[in-house]
Image (cartoon, rainbow, N blue to C red):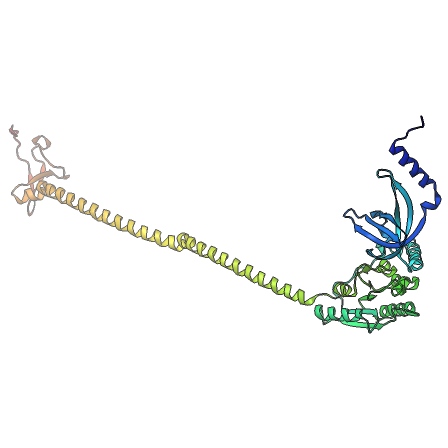
Length: 404
């Protein structure tokens, strides 16, 4: 029985045959693009066809730098890459590394070669890029004086900032002598001391844009002391000038948006900020006014003057109470004194004397209340109502009296 192989073995064998064929590893194929699909992964799936056949193709996302335009159905292209077998499906397909529009292949080869050369020299390095000034006062423009690019730039500059001075160098941007004209414009505007230079033109074919792929233009941009914005063609167009410039803009209008400060929007924004600040200030004033009113109420309650008045009123009340208490106390004492005086008046010796009584004392003023205090011959003083009688003791006689 003959040898039996699996499908995978057959597919692998065929793949090895394709891999070992040097011709299929580096081949250029031309044809018309059909079934072109840009996948979300970045890969591009398409077919190349001519009048007699169709070839399935794929360009991986990592090879997209080899595509300088957006490919679409119907484009006549030249694709460079390799033919290989996809083992899982058992079919072969073309793996594209680079794609150019048919007729532009030679120019595109020159473009890639110069791009690689300048990149190897470091002219695309980020550390050499100059920042674009935010508030440019003078903007230089190197472009055709009659093209759409200058009209777009003028419209944008008038809308964004009519106070910026625009200096145009009318350069050739296509055909013989265009590269030299662009270089001279860059050099003259650099010497004029503008703040930023826009170099560009409107869209076109790779032949129309070729002046901006010349090495002399790239070197003039690289050596320019003034920051340069490259604005060549449409968004999908890339030139050497885009890579060497300090900033690449997809269109001339976009370059103007980057070069001219938008003073109108700035003034509108400032007006908005002013209104917000005023609202914030008035809100803060209202809040602080309410706080002051609360503090004022508390201060009135805690005011030392108010508290002093309260203390004064309290002192006056206390003084009134003390005065009333003192007057009442004095009245009570006076009443008691009157009672004591009445009692003392009833016991007063003078009153007794007025009633016919008298009292006796010796010469020293000591009251004599007993016969035992005197002897015969002592002098005595007898006090009566209207005077004093001096007398001498002739005799004494002791008597017993019953007080009851």
